[in-house]
Image (cartoon, rainbow, N blue to C red):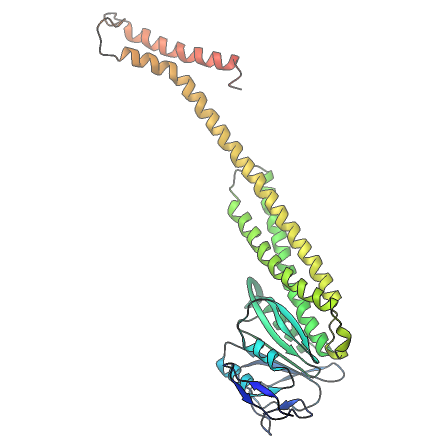
Length: 354
């Protein structure tokens, strides 16, 4: 039986029949695989063995093999395109593509897709979104990314710590759990930021927190978009007939979807809370503006009668009063003060001033 295989540039070339070990087109002897970030062999008892990526890796050994690639390395893409594994060609094509929408597919006994994750920077996840591409069979998990991701890095650390993972599905579920954990940590930080902003707003310190609230709302929106897509693909997988898949690649989609639903609900609550705080802050700003306008109107009203009198005495016409009076200036000043006092009295009576 002949199977077509896809090169990294999408060109179809002929391939040999897939052998019983699940790989064809590979060298007879183990070879160094370019572009690997790390590799693990998981034995039948669930224990994990990290493999030296600078040494040849035997693809035909027993157990589950996890190969994680840096897809920004063209050598990795060329190696993936030039070798055929026991995965459908469409799954390999998706790994080598640059699609940025989340998806999850099952064909034959292979599960493949694209899921979002947070970019990993030094020792902590950031708020930047990137994508993990993977294809999973009973004995092989191939994953790849263009930027360092927090979930796969966390999964690597727990495997190195000795945590056992029994199947390929359990390994992928661990990765998805860490995706949720990373977003959960961001959500906790956003909640703490909202508590601080709310305290400042309610204490009426006069600080303008609109920029901080805008950042929180923007981050909540980004997380919601990714969680919504992740929820949808696991809900759809749960609704499909997954019994046809082998137990080793059968995901607990309902459990994963439930956790993602809860996290998305929490994110949406924080988004709504930030919106209400933004409205409260806007009301405070409008109230402060109204007070300033009211004060300006009162000052204008108090100064209007003196301005009128000043204008009258400033006219260059004959017959102006007090021009010959030695006390004319004092009398004019008394008139100015009296007119302002009268305006003040009238506004107090009309309750314009409080």
